[in-house]
Image: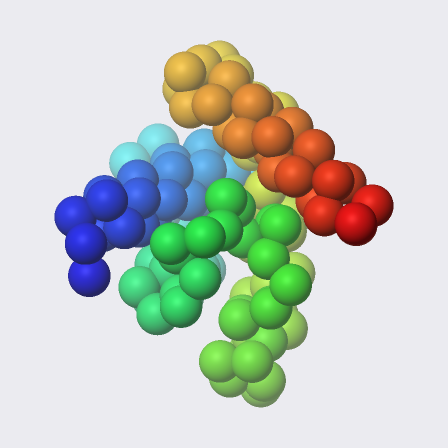
Length: 123
């Protein structure tokens, strides 16, 4: 694996951990550390990122056509997917206050991906 892919993977894992931590602090009242439910979600999300075969070409999991949370383990995958979606819906808009540069980067990359997909679909 190239260094760029590994760096991207580590950055993605760090960001999902930050988003889960923010969610847990605000929704579950945790001051230090994660509650057991959020800790399990973080572990699962980081494992999914470690195993992602599309890391080189994808921008964000939300843009991916494969829902690896469900494919990895259908018994718990759907539940984890719903949990991570709730975390993203809650934490995403609040990241501008916690990690403004990462939030701006995310918006720019999302817009870039939307333009790329629109161009691809027109062909």
